[in-house]
Image 1 (cartoon, one colour):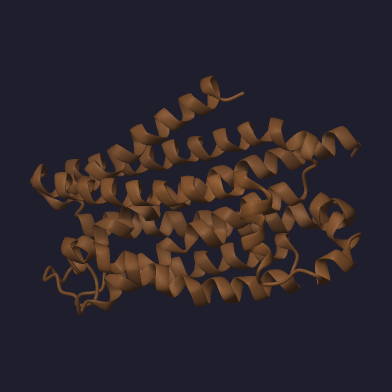
Image 2: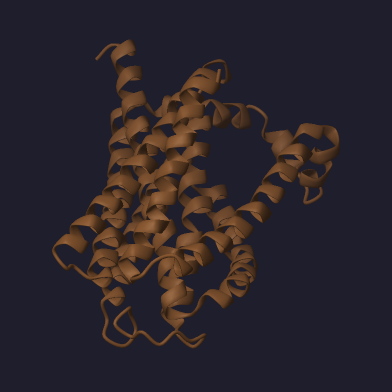
Length: 306
């Protein structure tokens, strides 16, 4: 295999991984809200958000320790495989008679709703972000700006396909009287399988690519600057905000986006509950919003991004 073919195959594998990761996250993200509302209740959404932020601190610490000892490709394999297995495990409880959706009494004591929500919240920082980090680390800075748009398009296509699949299955369920419980189970299983496929794809990528390419551009720079790396202190992250003001802008953009996202998600759930007549219609409403959101994002990525 020559260099051009090797690079082409690498791009294809990464494109598929980005497509799969956003498809998996899109399916789980809407299930997260749906299951939490039915098991715990809409009024507890602010509480679960606050709890998630608190629990992310030890989870990020564990990730930081793992990142200091493992290469990004191995880290991505472990986390995507872990989330795939845990997703399949949690899917079983969706159909459980007392723990899952068969129990229609919403209560803050329903542990499953809390656990499922926190599990899904971890996908974005611990799978999606690691994939982006892995992509950046193995890419030369001169190539990233061109490939970034391609990978962004892959994520939007993944979101559109996942939302479309969910909407199709929901309409199929309405037509053939498949209840919302089985539908949630199927969507959760599909999402978990996507996660496992990401792990398999990255494993193939790792074994079929030269070691120095897997090590990555950023890792080579770090290895050439070990002395500088050892000087990094806890305050280095804070100094970055003042040394590179654009990083403070990224922080502000992310912070305010999360605030807006939480508000609109809460409003969306309220509108969905009040304007749908049954649970499967409510689930369809959530995925329909996700579908058009990803369609808009895809249009921006294709026509509005240079």
